[in-house]
Length: 386
Image 1: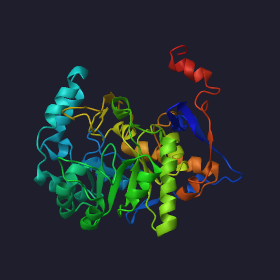
Image 2: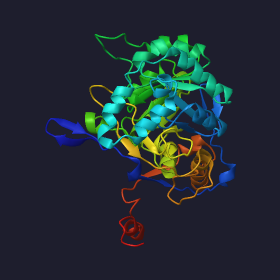
Image 3: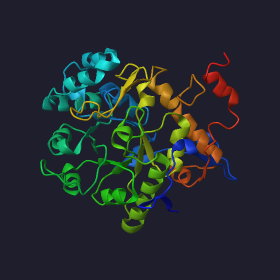
Image 4: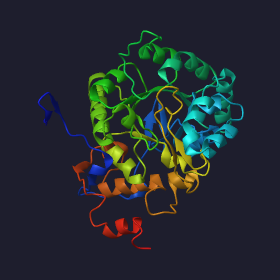
């Protein structure tokens, strides 16, 4: 339903995860009997969770560990692992610098050129550890870095920017032809990010393996504040999932939707899939793992921009191992650990045996879902009760 913003413009209401809730049906299922697997680019993943291509989240070791745990970790080709031999030393600098010196340091560190020989080395490190090698690049660098990564043995390539479209215009740089790029890469290509039905639909027509949905919801991302761009995730996922279903009906090709950002606890992941996502990409929850390269810190990918930085450095702390965060057991009661257990339990409660069935559960608008009856929890968080 259109809402009048003013005399000159009509708008509509959009919803985020905190404004919705999932409604049980007449059926319940044993959580152990649920199937949470997802297939992307012809490859089956037992866990529908992808670790974001961010320097404080994924290094070659964590990427391999994510594979072992059933998910996927994506390594950022524009990150420090491909600019410096001793990336850990650089990451230690980023984590330790005072807040007021953080952005200038990032801008300086990322001036170091990407070294092509490190692309092959890091990919081989992931594969040598038994991992699936997935790497990402911005569209402007994909034409050069894509073939290098593919020839080095990359299994999946991700083309990712704040906003991606098939109708980009530029007078200063070569425009990436996604359809041609996907055909020439010969490995699955995931692309993003988008938040609308129309863009998701056109991206699917280029032959991509999956579409990433989400602009600016990440814990460390400041794009929404700096650019004013974005749509709350529940609505964005639902719109793009509708595009996926339309594309499948017309072409008999299923292109998975991956919700990217804005998910902090297990309930958020459950809601993302209920809104239509096939899998999720998360950053800050993984940054809390003891294996994460940020050592308790998490920062945005667009922070190093020399002209318009869009990414804060936040302290997320370290709460446990990656295995505990993904598979449990949980040490805390706030949903920050055992995401697989949360998803299976939610699906069982809702009577959804598969991810596809979870996408069909009833979703209600519930702006009070996080506060209703929680007076003591709120008081304790404010220090009123010890």
